[in-house]
Image (cartoon, rainbow, N blue to C red; front, side, top):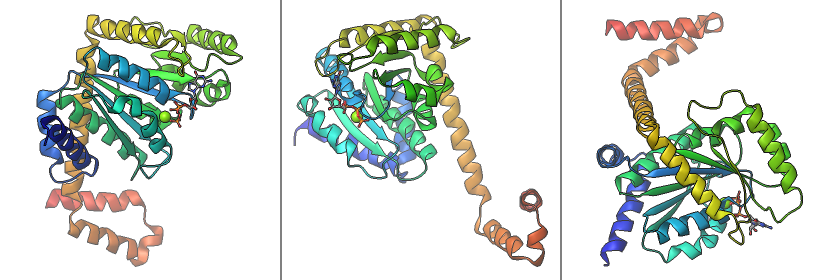
Length: 310
Ligand SMILES: Nc1nc2c(ncn2[C@@H]2O[C@H](COP(=O)(O)OP(=O)(O)OP(=O)(O)O)[C@@H](O)[C@H]2O)c(=O)[nH]1
Ligand SMILES: [Mg+2]
């Protein structure tokens, strides 16, 4: 078998292991953390059908043309299956599929949405460990989960369309906080100027977006023809240089490491705590005659005290 294909198959297996929380996940992530941390992670979010995948296609093709090892992950928080819209994405991504240096993967929510966002971080870490230069993360929607997934990225592009006024309204402050670059796609349609003006006024209004010296640009694109893609690439490059100049590149990775340590410690403590005896104790407390008058605080206290005695 071709060495490249073997490599890609191994990558696909590693990602599945991490996604499923299999027994090998810890070893894989441990190794990835030691060798990675260089990929530029680009989050692409926005309402359904805004043109995210079409744009991601262009960006990925351009990075790949420049010799960058590029990964695309599509995360669909609304779908418990890998199908539907994502399958559509796969078809559209066909223009990328012949390239040796592009890897495409979709993820869907199998459990909790919080779990999905954590898995997205882990999958990015694995890709980083595999030496990818660029990781594009596409997420459908504008809401809390997109905020969380956006935190897996170094930079977040929000793709809107001339008709996105209601989406911006629904998301209020959130959209201003997570977006580093705004894109008004489908600018071949009516109403682009009004949307651009609206976004610019929101940007001007925001009191304090970040400690970083960055003004969120608003870029018009027509993703179907590739118009404006160069401006997006230039903005991404500028953002990356700004992060590097501000030493923010380093602190973003430090913050990510800290969050991961918190997660590992919390999960380990919780796993140690909830022994079969503790679960039995809890069941008994809940079934006891006085359960109706019980407070969850007192039950928790009992369980925690028994931990200290143990
Ligand atoms: N007129 C016009 N249509 C566009 C433009 N960009 C994308 N489209 C079309 O809009 C539709 C949705 O594009 P996608 O790239 O799949 O959008 P998406 O945001 O990835 O969609 P989901 O992942 O399903 O949320 C497709 O039919 C595209 O061809 C554009 O600039 N102008
Ligand atoms: Mg899409």
